Amino acid sequence: MYSLSWPRCRWLAVASWLVTVLAPAVSFAASTQIAVEGAANGVYNIADFGAVPDGATDNTVAIQKAIDQASLKGGIVVVPVGRWLCRGHLEVKSGVHLAGLNVAPVSWEPATGSILMPTEGRDSEDAAPFIEMRSSSSLTGLTIFYPEQKVDDIRPYPWTIQIRGNPANKSEVSFDSTIADLTLINSYNGIRTGPTENGRHRILRVNGCVLRRGIFVDWTGDIGRLQDVQFHSHFWANKAFNGNWDKVFSYMQQNLEAFVFGRTDWEYVTNTFVFPAKVGYKFVATPNGACNGQFSGIGADATATAVLIEAIQPMGLLISNGEFNSHQAGPATQVIVAKSARGNIRFVNCGFWGPVEHNAVLQGEAFVSFSDCYFSNDSDTRQYSIEVERGKVQIQNCTFGGVDTRHSPGHEDSIANSLSQPPCIYLGPEVRSAIVRGNNGAHGVDIKSEIGSRAILSDNEPRDTQPQNK
Image 1 (cartoon, rainbow, N blue to C red):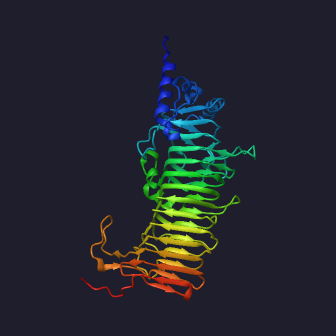
Image 2 (cartoon, one colour; image 1 turned 45 degrees about the vertical axis):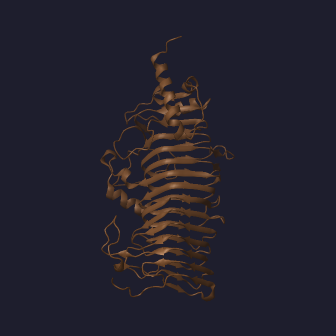
């Protein structure tokens, strides 16, 4: 038997806590057993390398020294509670796990916990990201707040976090990086992967306010995962971080592209949400290619456009159980399939609502289907809910709802025959084919088709132009 010194006892306790509490957040298998003695030898506290949590001392060099030391054999770099200013950027090297003590994302108050405060890159989106992550690294348990970003003068900054290979080695790829349990208070550009090849990224339980871009995925050659991510203006609304609800909401609705997907070979996206945004989910082509993926339980609220599809891979998008709300801002249309889009797009069991011009406008030569979806519009308009200009479309088993002008938010409609319902479906002359079957509506379903026999229309509830009072 021997007695342990206090510092050694302290680090054994920290190591044990990290293994039992933080391990799930960085996706360690539940069956993994790590000896406390071994874990303690791989735990590094940034304070032991000269970092000071006073919100004024530049800690960039001290934190990087801790990371460099941990990278020699692999290990955990601990960011204790405090405000850790960084005037430079960090590289989380392979095998290193940068871990704060926030075991879950925190709310917009109190302003406590493990907080990193970057300042580098003001007015330069192309500057070095605050944190670059290499293969087999993780980032967890942290709040990130830009102290020099002001709600009255929002300025561009580079990406807060980027997963990529080392730019000094053009052949390097980055696989199996994990971001979990993070809060982003006011990132201008949040998280991105690429543009170099990467794979199997895991972005889990991230919350916060992002201003220009939230998450941008590119050149993911093996399945990436986004899960339990919520972006909201709330997180930079509190005085604890010098926020303001109205100003942040307005900026996000006019500027934010929350989830952007370039090249990714099957992206699994589950339980993600944004409020508000200019674009909720955007699909683009980069020099690396475009996206295919599964999207389940996703949402976008208070948007100008909830889903904008400019380019996808032929296998396309599988979107299920989504809810999409747009306001009278910008195009005021929840789904836009641009002229440049090709491939397959499937919406199943999704809800579209809010004051809009259209629920969907389909302009590209894509295959688009809506199945078991709900469409409604809070605006008094004669614009069609779904306007199809090109491509092929299937609309089946959907409901076109109406809106009660006396409706109270959060409550059911009061009088069914007072519902206002815009016209439902327009098929323009350049549409190649349409199958529209088994749909109903508050006052039935009206369809205007200009494609003759290229439209198969059957078993749709007739439009009731003069509903009877009860």
